[in-house]
Image (cartoon, rainbow, N blue to C red; front, side):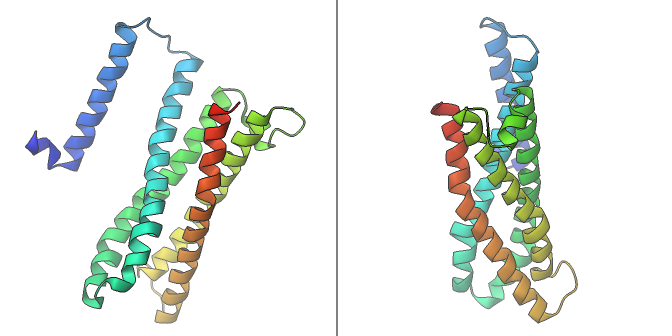
Length: 200
């Protein structure tokens, strides 16, 4: 077991294997289930939750851990963050954001409320579609910020693309502010989505 846990790849593969065994157990030792719209709605909701945890977890890591800690890190150690940790974290961060949006839209399509949610349930008289619609739009805005503001500016700030020291400083501030804006939006976004699933 130690050999498995010392490798992230092996750990993740084992975790996925256990999850699949649980799924098969639920299928064969329960009442079973058809591979229909309900199954795929569940499957994409599961993927939506997984990618969402990765995305928001990293957003909160940046805002609650990395950014506040940077002033306390000695200058000679900061390149380890900027050259090694941040690029890897930003890779998972941006792709998890995209995965969360895509899987969320697929779930809403499979469950038949994508259109009503995207227009915030206006005229439907259904507060559930209004709630989930607010959450979806906040998530889309946040993902837009990740891909079209935070990531381009982080590439400059981290020296992935050529830039002057002034441009790096400006881009670092812009990326931080939009990351902080996403943190601001994250609590109401999650509240809207959880409310839609549990209050209506």
